Image 1 (tube, rainbow, N blue to C red):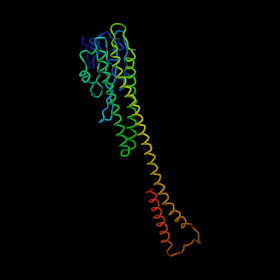
Image 2 (image 1 turned 90 degrees about the horizontal axis):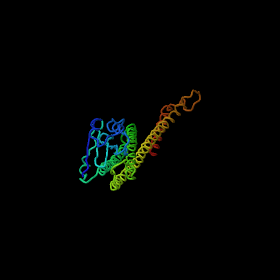
Image 3 (image 1 turned 90 degrees about the vertical axis):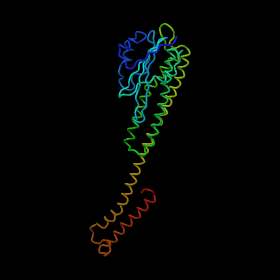
Length: 303
């Protein structure tokens, strides 16, 4: 017998109770209809509740044009013959999680557990794509470090760092929830198994993809740290350049100041005091010494 699949989008608590294949606990209903506290809430989970299995998954989606990441939430209630999916619309008019790619690969003979696997596998694929998108954003930021202001670079590094932390806060619980299915730790009190052996084996494939996504996320953190280090080294190099230029200016001014100081002393017997060409001579010394210093600093690459 083909599995029954019920899909609800932003249902009320009453609609959820009417469509649910079992009487759901109030805590499960509250989680399925509650507004998220922030983007990466609630935490993904998958656990047995009496004679049904209850789960919540989060999908992180990147919007490269807007340099942001938002989250789509989907809840599931499974029995041995029925699957209920509850999708929530993200804030700011974003699209909810699209089940059409999953429907296109679902077979008539698929059990609710197998359909749940196909949903989880699609989510895992999207996390792999997300890691690629984040890496592309980091590469783009690295290319812009030399062109944009330091404040813009620091703000973008901070945003990407927070995005990576939030993604990890959803991806790690997703991995753990799927692992519980692979380990046959999600059980119901009575009736047929929701996750037969073939479904547990299939979930292992999704688990591997989530592990790859987590490994890729760690690499993304390393890449972002490299960009931060490069930005800091650029700041230090820019400061060195400024210091060198200030040193050049101070050195150029130092000798003329010395010459003026020498001839500005108030003593009666000073060499060149009554010399007709003394003024021109002092200027010649100042200009000549300045030109020599400019030539020297230019040769050393400080100018």
